[in-house]
Image 1: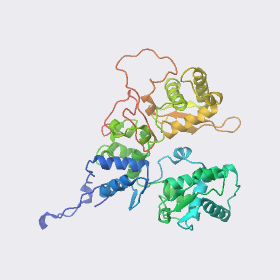
Image 2 (image 1 turned 45 degrees about the vertical axis):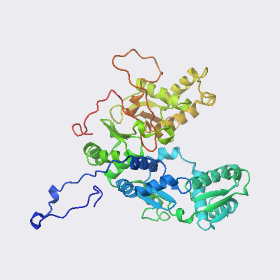
Image 3 (image 1 turned 45 degrees about the horizontal axis):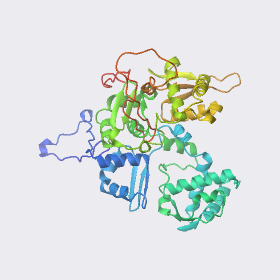
Image 4 (image 1 turned 90 degrees about the vertical axis):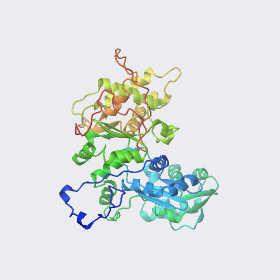
Length: 459
């Protein structure tokens, strides 16, 4: 068996039938997973939650064990590793397709540093230990590594965040006491259980190089999958969508030739998703009956209630009306300067400052904070990307906001500026667009673009 099939090779019925293989005419056999609703639901859950811990997810762990073969077959297509133990299921995934955008939504760098310092300390801890003892050993590990230790409130917040991250993964579990008490008491009476066997599973991509001797090469190896086909499968499963204009030649060829047929389509079926393919790109879409709550789709639903989401929706409408197409990455992209974005969001804030449903006061009073939040939302959901422009007189580059063709899905839903009446059927209500686990709702791209067959119209 190989990566492209889960069917074993058959022996010829007669010796005369065994013709020598011809590499020039050898055809790749399609991977055809059996459709199974439970397997699809488990794959979607594991894509969003990579750790299932005994005592918290017992029913899910039992379901994984029942469907282990089908799950391994699907994740192997992505180069991921599924670990199944009696009280633990761990999906070791590749790094996200756009690590910087995901890092902006993640924990602070200080919390990440303490996460690994606590992890290093936990390796030598007994199975039961107090939180104060664990943190003391982490301080010793920091000193050994030459990292500063301040013992201030900022550091304690980072340590507390790291402790919660370890607890979420089941590496360290609270047995007694309240972890949050550590914030004000470094010797808070909190008893922890340390699961040493799970420490080895924290690093999803250890790589083959030594990070201490060449950290840059190690990061490049861990973050960049060399195979274009597997790279594209991972992006479709683990990100909002794929934009044709941002692909290299090998990736564009895969999207043109294999996304519907023997590769992308069956993978979407395995996850219980639907493939949406347009000239602007492609995405795996979550059917409406596959979830009950937006939180099941990921941490960044859009559109959604709230000041940030409303401001982002208005900005998309504004970009569709006033954005530039000069030097765009491809058809459907619209650009706005940072100054234009700040001015637009400031004006929107003034228009939505009062009355029922008015915006949060802190964002109206601080437009730059609003700009930062909207930027994180739109870049996180892959609806916008920022490119640095020529440095200004002060030497600082000003980013240029490029809004993706996918934003056309909502351009007529905002109220950034009155528009003339239009003819034809009205679009439906926009549906959520989460970032993780990479799934969107139906109607991803602009309705004005034709849904062309990519084999007839290569990307």
